[in-house]
Image (cartoon, rainbow, N blue to C red):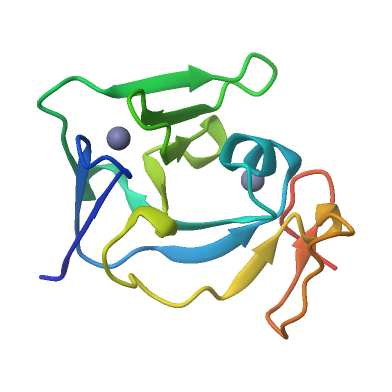
Length: 138
Ligand SMILES: [Zn+2]
Ligand SMILES: [Zn+2]
């Protein structure tokens, strides 16, 4: 089975993912943009059981967003955003591809494409989804 590893910037939190992701997608929503401090975020979606977290120093912190209830887990030492989870994706964890050591799969879609900011437009040919839930064909 494929095992994909990853870590935060300082290396205190390490991730191990078994098997293939269910999807790899770019997210252009404003929440991801702010949380990651980036124009968009690329996630690989895995079943929760695929993920093992190695965190011997207890660095992994969690931010729960009050209006959506979604959670973002990040390293409290170096600030790297690592994991997203939300009610809409029960049983699933979305892993920041930027933190992985290898490519889990190429991105196939843009979510919340209609929220992409002017300063970071989408310039490739991948299918774009948007609307209130970010998943309606545009
Ligand atoms: Zn760290
Ligand atoms: Zn997002």
